[in-house]
Image (cartoon, rainbow, N blue to C red; front, side, top):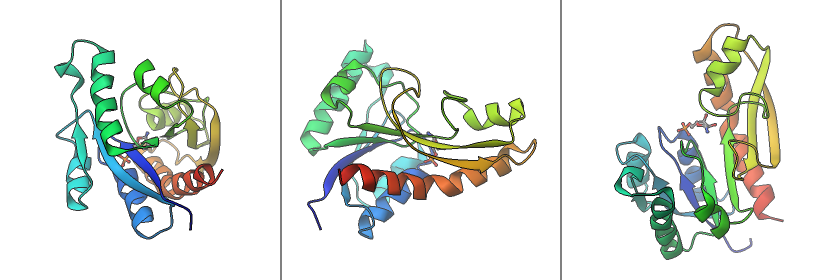
Length: 190
Ligand code: GRF
């Protein structure tokens, strides 16, 4: 097998995608190694998950910096020390700015719980249910300066459970982990 790709996973919440990526790396189902977990929320559950599997954590709070650039420079410093080659966003609730975009051109990936370009931004599942669409889904895409606007790499459709946000979210999360793993493997083997 080829050399493992060094990735940093960015997350702000529960971290089920982080855990799935970590398990896939450990099981050699993903040709990558998580060298750092970056979070803007030190209290997020994903930090516990990372600690449990001994993945180094950079918990960096935007409010400790005067500007977004300074916040991202601090992240970049940690990324450079870790040797990360790709940034994998998994529920990272911040818009990536120019500092990271310029440091990792076309090397930042995100997963979003809708069929983009429908329902970008926050609460994509709630938006889809409220809109009454019958089908929504999951998109994996490269990150650019916009909100969920970068080049689409993979999509998977998921039926909306009429009027039921929780059940629809469950169905979406069930496809996210496999789709992210497959898409990252494809990307890293190019
Ligand atoms: C996922 O639905 C992902 O698509 C979105 O944020 C959510 C993160 O979930 N970007 P988790 O923290 O990985 O469980």
